[in-house]
Length: 495
Image (cartoon, rainbow, N blue to C red; front, side, top):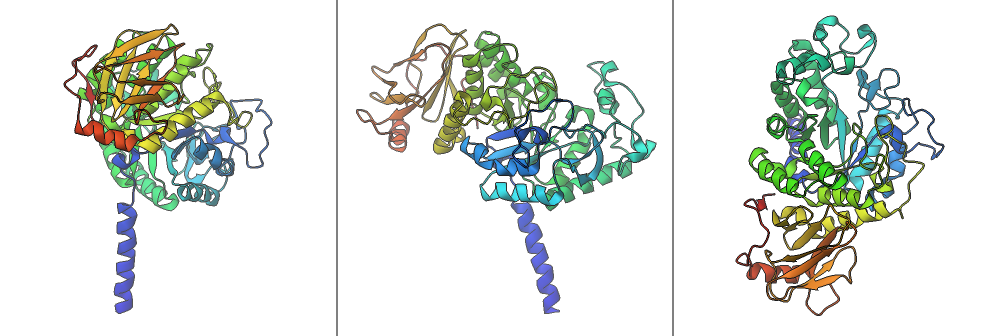
C-alpha cells in the first residue's frame, strides 16, 4: 500500500510540475525568436551544395539545426520556431501538408532526433516553438491521410478565394489553397486533435506552438486546443485589420502582428511618413488585450523579403532594430542575418547553408541588438514615445533611447521630452565614442544615412558604462516635467 501511495504521489508530482513548468506568455516576453524552415537551414552531413529546386526538399534536418546551435546562440537568439514536423504528402518540404499527424517527417530525421534537438536547445536555455496545423491536411487521396481518412472528417469543398471578406463563418469552412479542410465540429476530429496536441507537447517537451491559419477554424476550438496544449500559443491570422486580429487574443495567447509588419514595410521600405508608427500605436494600445506578447516581425516565409528587388540596407536595419526593440515578442526570419532578398514563395525560402557568415554586417547588427536586449532587459520597461514627425521617431524603454529615421538625408532633432537628469552622458550602442550630453534639459540626436541609434547612459566624464548607477539616479529625479517638444497624445505603451 505504501509503495502504491508513493507511486501515485510521484506521478502526480511529475504531472503537476510538468504543467507548472510550462512557459507562459509572460515568460515568453524574455525571448527573441529565430524562425527556421527546417528543410532550408542545414543538412546533417554539412553539405553546402546549392539546392536546384526550391519547390522540393533540399535536405535540411533536425541534426543540421542541432549542429549549428552555436550560430543561433551567438547571434543572440534564445528561442527558435521550427516549421511543422509531422509526415507530409509529396513535396511538403515546408511541413504544411500533413499526411500522418502521428509520424515525424523522415526527411527531417527521426522522432528521437527531434527530441535530441529540443534537449540540446534546452541545455542552452533556447526555447523551442513548433509550427502546428489543425485546419487542414495535405493534398491527395483522403483515404491515405491519417487519422482523418473519411469524407465525414472534412467540410464540403468551397474555395477560400470565393469567400467574401465579411463572411467569417465561410472562412472557417472553406478549403485554403485547395487543401482538405478539417471539420472541427465533427466529434472524432475535434477530440483527436485535442488529444494529439496534448500528447505531442508532452512527448517532445515543446515550449510553445505557432498555430497556422487561425481564421479558418472556429474560435471555440482554438480555446480548447490552447488549453489542451498547455503551453504558449501564438496564432497566424493573415490579415491587417487590427480589431479583427485582436479578437483572436483570448482563444490563443498571442498573434503574429501583421499590422505592425505592414507599418514597418510602409515606413522603412517605402519611405512612408513615420507618423504612421504613431498612428499604429495609438490604435494598437487600445485594441490588443495584451500588446506586450504579440509577435513582431519584418519578414516571414509567406511574404517577399524586405530586400526583394531593392537594396535599402539602412531601411532594413531600421525595421529589424525597431521590431526587436519595441513592445512585443520579436521574431526574425532565418536568412535576415545574411541579407537575403528572396521574393515570392518559394524564392523567399532559400537554403542558409550556402551563406552562414558570422561576420556579415546584418549578423553583427542583429547580434549587437540582441546582446543589448539581454544585458539590459529593457523589454521589462514600458515604451514611451519621445519624438515623432514625418522622418524621425524616437522612444525610450527604461533608461534607453531608441532613434529611427525613414530618410537617408541628414536628420537632427533636439530632444526635450525625456527622463534623464542634467549632465547625463548618453552613448550609442553601435559606436561607443558617439556620445551626447544632456544640457539645459535637452540633447541632440543626429541620424546620418538612415542609421539607427540606441543611446544608453554612461557615467558623466567616464569611459565606462554604469547603467545601473545612472538608472538609479534617473529614477530618483524623474524628469517627466520637462518641456514636451514633438509629442502626441499617446506616449506610453505598457509591457
